Image 1 (cartoon, rainbow, N blue to C red):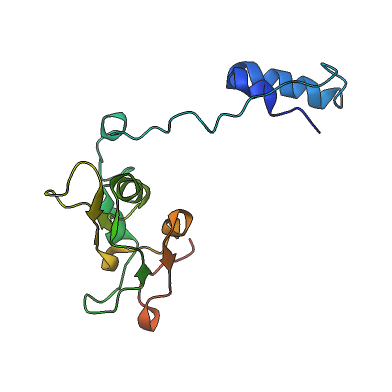
Image 2: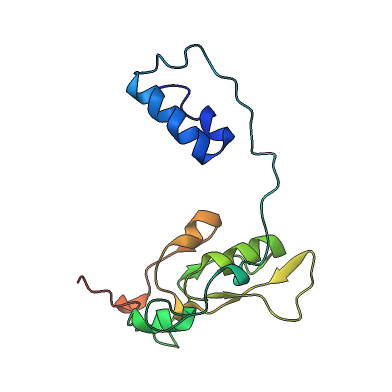
Length: 154
């Protein structure tokens, strides 16, 4: 069905009922075509979200390193690096990788410049094979010898 994207430009609460009405009437409501504008030129939020999340309680929410421990990660410390990423990257990309990784694999050094390229630290032994790095320019290869998290189906 066409034109179901445009109502959401008014927000989720206004767009949801409009789209439901459009689906229920098989596109006859509201009739005609809706105009829309591109929104890829809007600035992307790059900021600190630490204040928005509750502190880990150890029962329902965990910090990143506790989450790595819970996965049963069995990567040897002397295993070869299985994450293929560029080490010298723009700070914005490095910050994206730091916030995207659920296991704290990527770190920005404290002495890194605020603007320009930074030398990224990769703690590949913490990797839980989530594959998030493949979305933003890296490549995840299988760890040597079947190392990695020991996920079990419950």
